[in-house]
Image (cartoon, rainbow, N blue to C red; front, side):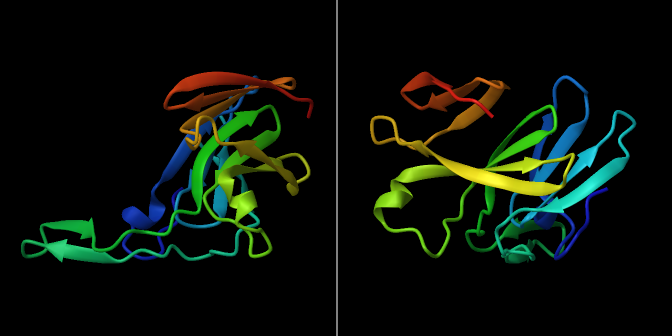
Length: 161
């Protein structure tokens, strides 16, 4: 199911999220612009790319102690930080900012929305810092609410998708 690129371990690192109410699962690679959907039998039904341009994981792996273990030899470039899913929508917190964003815009957390039915990118929105802290987790609860979790507090954001 996981497609290796470099070492087969670190390059396949990612995040899994169950979608509600249909019970499928979404797996988002951490270091590249790709995700896929699994049905309840763990078969891949959809593979998609995010809008980021990082198609190959930017990691460097070092082998330690005569080949018995591996470790990342430098900090990796994280592409996708968090994921939440609701019905046919996948929300991915991107770690990367687009080239046309200004420094002031980078004080927000970007979240991209993908439609699994149409296999399309729907758009993005930005979540603000809270007490100068970046978002540590988020959860899409229904078509009206997103739960935002920061190190110093929890906020509920009312939206409509």
